[in-house]
Image (cartoon, rainbow, N blue to C red; front, top):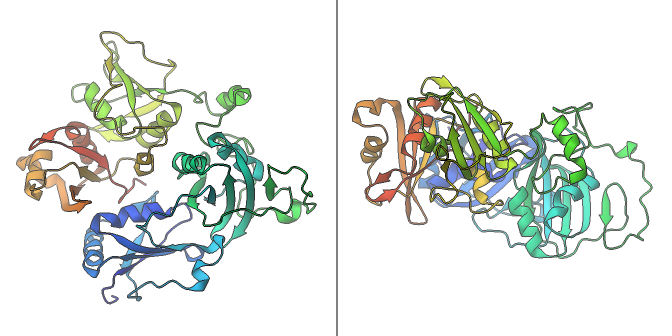
Amino acid sequence: MAEPSKVIHIRNVGQEILENDLLQLLRPFGSIAKVVMIRSKNQALLQMDDIDSAIQALQYYDNVQPNVRGRNVYLQFSSHQELTTNTDQNSGEGNSQFRHSDQELAPNRILLVTINHMSYPITVEILHQVFSPFGYVQKLVTFQKSAGFQALIQFELQENAIQAYEGLQGRNIYDGCCQIEIQYSNLEELQVNYNGERSRDFTNPNLPVDQRSSSSHQQPGYIEGGGVYGYRHEPRGSYHQHQHQHQHQHQHQMGGGFGKSTLLVTNFDPDRMDEDKIFNLFSMYGNIIRIKILRNKPDHALVQMTDNYQAELAMNCLRGARLFGKQIEVGYSKHSDITPSPDTKDYTNSSLSRFHSVSSKNFKHCSPPTRTLHLSSLPRDITEDDVIGHLVGESDSGVVVNVRMFEVNGKRQGLVVFESEETASECLVEKHGSVLDGCVLRISFSQTERRN
């Protein structure tokens, strides 16, 4: 085993894994000074602020297998004791994988966009369709680098670029693939010489047209044939971007799910679940408007989310999850919304809603059920035994495998590992929003271990 180091080497980092995903693995153990994504080798190097933080992280992951976006990643000490920048690492937008991680890059009206897990070709037109709902896109340039297919996108206003960053980071253009990873560029102005298949200046339509053949510049790495829904050039993209003239076509191709924000949840245990517990589970993936348990079918419930993106996210993450010995099913309801009534519970103004805007950064932390729960808003003097006693009681303490307490920005937080995803899910639905020593407990699934 390598000598302990502040630098942690992570292997098996697939193209679908974002830098932010790796930061989530290590931030509970301390500040991260630097990060290098080595895309060509599916590896990454992350430097902690001090060696003790790195040791604690590796000791924790000796007992818990970190799984990111369905892929096991492997951590070890690096042979490097320190990461140092050099000219090559900081030259060229396409290779700018080195940066000071916990220092926010300055917002800029130019975005550097990387498309990960690219199963279908991405064109200038598709990128313009995805990004233009956030503001006027002036210029767009695409290129191929070692990090994969990338683009530089220049907005007229910096605030529009910020909105696009917050609204699209981590989203998929197509279902299950073509994931958007965004960084702020350090360029001040994009230079576009041609209007063509790889670049476009929307402020100057009179530029020369690039005559190079599209067949000779085919994008590598994408699969021929139709996608999951049998279409190739109709991106799903952001929930902001769907245009009215394509609505009927998308409804047919996507099983009628387009635009629907109300879900039908079935096969849960009606003796163990009520509206509040359903809320605790589904509010992981968006804000809830109303919930209605069907009295003639007590193991059926309608859940109305704020918009169709949140509903789709909840459906994809929770379909088939196990809870109290039952495997719940989640699908779209035939009802577009839930009509207020005495047997309907309204959560519009719930203080436990997690998302304060449609572009909330909390979306990037959403995860399917895992064995590991993240606890926040903990009392400052709380102990591990206090946490276990509150969550499961002393008689059931055996279902807890590991507990780690830490502080982030002076606030007490914790990670609790359970023996199974099912017991972790049961704890979340029962204890999220509960009061511990005067503090309202916030619980979510942690991304340190994702469901395969």
